[in-house]
Image (cartoon, rainbow, N blue to C red):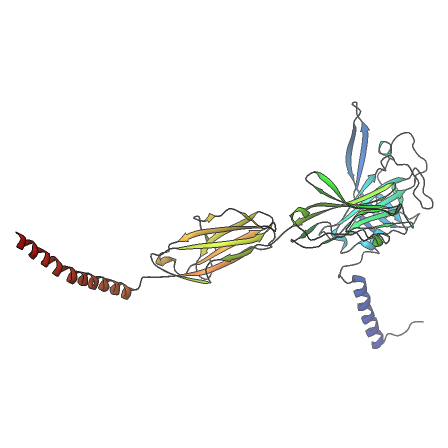
Length: 437
């Protein structure tokens, strides 16, 4: 039976559709990709052999492949290598945001490093083959690594897994199951001083109560220092920064103390559920915008023949590299401003909080033709999307002639007063000299 659509029905479905769309977009406004059927995902294959000197050599081969989501027995949708990801308690699609054109996918083989053990789910075998699928958002919203388990008919014994990789032919269909996901929504972090950023790290496993070990390390200057560790098997933890109660729900995010200069480095979140080990590197950099000022107001009036020291200060910036330039242009702007070459610079000044300051100055002795020009200090720094500019307009005037006349008259009067005072004494002195002779 077909129900006729009335105006009230239309309004109801329109309003309902709007609500559903808002729910799908979520609070952040990002698009859901939970129902995506497939993703292009190149497969980085490996050819491994031991050379004559006993060293292992690996050749990497980029091959065309796709991730396809479905059920056991589904046919491939594309004539390429197809990794069929079947339903499990872990679905990487629930973590995806944005649009498909922003996703960068890559599949690699995964070696268990000689650990031979059965994954604790139904149907798993000791000789299962593992792959990883890493999906990145091109604008840095997230990085997701999924471990894919592929069951083989028989095992190849006697050698470690990377020396006995199964052969994957073009157009092969490999049925897999997502066993574990490790992701971060902060692939890189840039913050200012004295901030407390939260480095996101999350994981999910396809079975309950996994034997998981979570660690955070900081890598800098070639060294790795442990910041935090927790083992669900022993219940013991070291360090701080992670809420232990949240780990049970898969949240291993790390909260930093107030950031300082020595906070910079690469923070590594790792999750180990034997025989799998997943990690994400999160580089953290500090950045502070400069405060820019000049030592004059918006208009500078000068008298012809005088000079003025003009100073542009950039203060409180980090990191060190900053560029300060002075230029001038005609009133109303100029397509080709003139950059000044007689600019001098102070040395970089380091402050106690780790930020820097720098000054750029020059001496201005203008002519009447310079009047009306605008002088600008431009400061560029990596923390700025656009340079900061501070400007003043120059007005040059001739000396006041009235003042000059007053000065000359005053000089003449002073000389006359001196003459009137000194002349009688001079004449009296000559008369006295004549009397002695």
